[in-house]
Structures are given as structure tokens and as C-alpha cells.
Length: 489
Figure 1 (tube, rainbow, N blue to C red):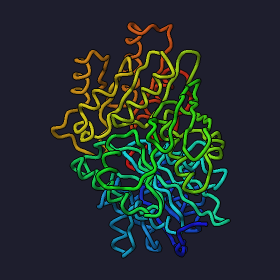
Figure 2: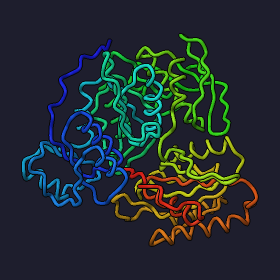
Figure 3: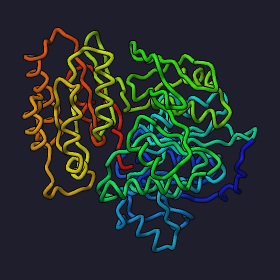
């Protein structure tokens, strides 16, 4: 029985999504459709995401010219949409309600007992693992900022019968939109000094996280990663009641005896109130062990035993662009990952290094000049597990390069640390692909071509597109990999 009385659901509305194919938007649009609303949308280019929405009956406008919004009740925009966008201007002219995606997510969540997963890293995978771990027992509704392979979507409509009505939602701190969401149960995966373009300082970022966590229900402790030092400090300063997961004996949910084999990780879960539980997840890396522990902590608050969660996690298939294996033949593997800040990159490379002695080359696309500049030292240190680094031009994400340093300066610093690095000043994708191929051929002089190699593409901009062209250049891919995952949002 839920401790939270659901409010009345939203009335049926005509809703238009500006930038419907964005990572954070497509799941909301699908959710609105499945909730019975009439939905339309627009985006600047065709994509598999738009085709999926069209298959659900969403009317897609080919142009964002501001026409066709007269009969809309609500217009939803992401933080990536400029205020002078013709559709936004038209909506305001017609007196339509214009909501950010964060506010709309909060509205959709009103009728649910909600689990909000936030953090500077790991929140997509953690939210997906929590949803997968509870699927057999509760089948919650799940909203993610990435596509879950076992759903084939970033949204899953769960069981709304039997008094369950539970929502697992990934919350985005990059634009402050998570401040609109007051979860029943809050999960904090980690903290790092990111999103300088929005917050301006690490102190402001931590204040926002504290404000969000303070808005969560007081009837449940906050589920936190005990291995993250900044999380521990924030919890101590704020005096939050917590349920901790991690590797140390202080954690309420502790992972021990961790072993990796093939593309899976096994560990023993220890919790004082339950017998030891053997767990297997189809993911690599200690960071993913931590991510999975959150599912057990949330399960406890919702009355689901560790044994039930562990059994349900066996169905998890991973996320698109989260250590996604694109190609593998004998001793040559190509991965793709969304990692775009130092903590994520370090965890990605450590996870691959831990399970293999292969020569590891990271093809890295920096995301935002402001991020690269504000985390410069951390970025220089995070590639220690890689044998070689290929640095692509910075994906600006709308920023204009000013005095911030870019890829060439970053490569120069890497070379001082005796790390193989290359900067590709490419004007188009073909040149980028040729540059990467040439780089790998040159690397072959240092890394035995007969030995095992892992190539991992990391970034949050056009990196899927780069990986697709690279594989076509190698002759192992006839068609593209689909749209890349746009970071914001």
C-alpha cells in the first residue's frame, strides 16, 4: 500500500514537443501518448527516434516555422531550444502554456510514488537498473535519458494496477530542471564539479543538489553512493537520513567478492537484514556494481527482497551508448560510450582495463569548451588506463569558443605526460574517419597488430556518427548506427 495518495491525473490535452527527438524529450512524448494525450512534435532532421514517435501516432512537423500550433494546449521545450525558436515565439503569441521538459516531467509524475535518480554520473544506468530490478515484483513505469535495450525505448509504461503506480525517473541536473521534481524516494549516485555553463561554481551546483534532496519525502531515507566523497560530505553537512550502498563495511548494502568474466560481473551482496545474495549483472566495471546496488536499496524501501531484485536483474540488457559493444571479432573490439566528464571516462576505461589486457585506445570527443576548461586537470588525469588517446575537435553544444582552450592544447598537455595523442582538425566526417584510421595504423607500430585491441569512442556529441563512419571505413558496417545520442537533451 502506497504511503502517498495519488493526485488526480492530467486531463487529456493536445501537446506539442519542440525538438521531439532530443534524448530527454522522446521519452516524455511517448509517455504523453500512452497517457492518452494527443501529441505532435517537430525536429530539424529525420531520425529513428522521430520514426518511432510517428509509429505511435505522433504527428511530426517537418519544419519549425511556428505554424500548426493554434489548437495546442501545451508546448514542451527543452533547454537546448533557443527562446527565439519560431515555434516558441508562436506559442507565446497564441497564449499557449509553454513548459520546460523538467516541469512537464514533474506534472506527469503527480499520480505516482516516484523514485528520482540524480547525480553527476551514472544516473541513466542506475535508473535503468532500479527499473529492471523491480520489474518482476512491481513492474514500475520507467523514464530515462537513454534508450534501454530491454525496452527498446527510453520509456516503459509499467503496471498501474494493484496499487503499484510506481515511477523510476532519471533526473537531469545540467539545466537545473531536477529542482522541479520532488520524489518520494531520492537516489544520489555521485557528485562532481560539472555544468559550469549553468551553475558558475561547484558551490552553486552542490546547493542545487541539496535543495533537490530536501524536497524529497521525509518518510524515506535518501539512497546514496557511500563511495563518493563529495556525496558523503554533502550528506554530513545537510544532515540527511540515508541508506548507503558501496564497497565498505559502513554501507547498508555492500558488494564483496567482485569478479568479472566475459561481459558480466558477479558479486556477493551483504545486507544486515538479509542473507548474503549472489548477484550477476551483464555489465563491466566496479562503477556498474555500485549502480546496481541502488536497485537493492530502493527495493528494500518498496518491500522487494534482494533475492527478487537479483533474479530480476538477470533480464537487464544494458543501455544504448553505455559501454555499448558495436563490433567484435576475435581480438578486436569497438565500444561506444556517453562518457563526457572525467569521472565517467575514468570509470569506463578502468572497467574495460579490469577485464582485459588488450591495447586500449580511447577516441574522445570533448563536450563543451566550458566543461573542458573547468575540468582541465581532471580530464588530463582520467585517461591513465588507456594506451592511446585520439582527441577529436570539441563538440561546442551551442557554445562559442572564446578564450577557452581546445583539443589542440589538450593534446599538447597529454603528450607532456607521455600519452599517445592526436588532434584531428576535421572539417567533415570523412576527414575525421580517415584521420582516425591513419591514427590506428600509426598506433600499430607501437601496439602489436597481432595483439588484442579495444577501441572505445567516448563523448556526448557526434561520437556515434564518428564510430559509424569508422566502422564503415573498416568495411565491417554497411549502414549507419542510427542517430547519435545528443547530450542536452
